[in-house]
Image (cartoon, rainbow, N blue to C red; front, side, top):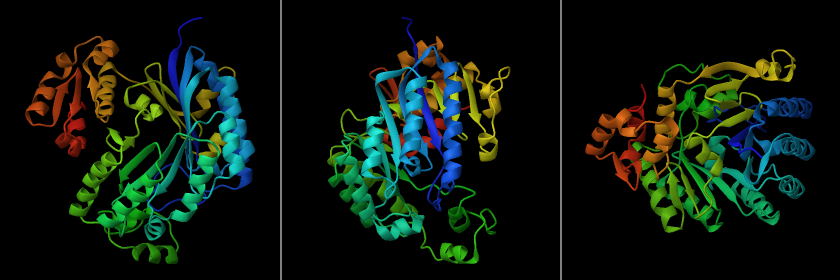
Length: 404
């Protein structure tokens, strides 16, 4: 049997019960008929795209959105069964599914687990109901607790909880309270991000650095509620939350292995590590991105175009779904290897750079590495170039130094 290359798969489910006010992901509400049509087209894509992955073995799958758990259980079962049937999946592959509180049932969770899902990622964001309302979330903390309990009762022993800091009306104390409540539940993994105000979202209308509010269609009542939201925490409070996250989670036994991700020993998200270390991946579903054989491409972001895509024997099903197709130069591959790898606290392997590109990392980036080391932003230790604590604080600046 030939040695197969490793591949990751991302599956996009774009449907949500309601879009959150801060979210710029490709997601929207959709009735059961639309969701069923989408599922059928997704399965068709899985069947045809798998033909281009025969020399690969799948080592991780991530089902994200949107809210994947909003699909009817039988539809999600069909998607998971299609993946298992069409692809060569490693027996110990990590299979993650995102699930929002209030959208999971005991029956559904047991079904996901029986179909191969072995990791659940839950979107809590805050343990404060008032802050959840400000974000536009549809659940309460109590609803999260009930959903979390269902996940554990279904037998899942690898659970991530997503959190967001620096949200409207949040204080350092309320953020610490969220961290306390979540760590008491002992999830294996915690992703803790600072809120980013993205253009094109309602939050950008409220908090963006502009005057006119034209980027998002809202009713008068929605706009009134938006403008009534409290201010964002000031910069000093935001930084205090940032440092508190590291210190508190470390005290509770969570190791920081990436800028925004913390884990109990042995529960790092293997799928995301694959992204950060340059592993090839195939994206399935609306707007999903892929990187295979040195090329980057992504599916259409138009739902009607996706649902109406037809397989053509000459051009291939993939042709109907790819909006753009770009072959990366060796320089672009090196750039991505550096700025993605530096997200990991372990850093970028000098030996790995040689293995990937056949060149010594210092021959390519020597002057940049020297300058960043002299500025106290990077260090070389145990064969890895990595960010210092100060470098992590200025990570956007550091990573930009490796872009042409």
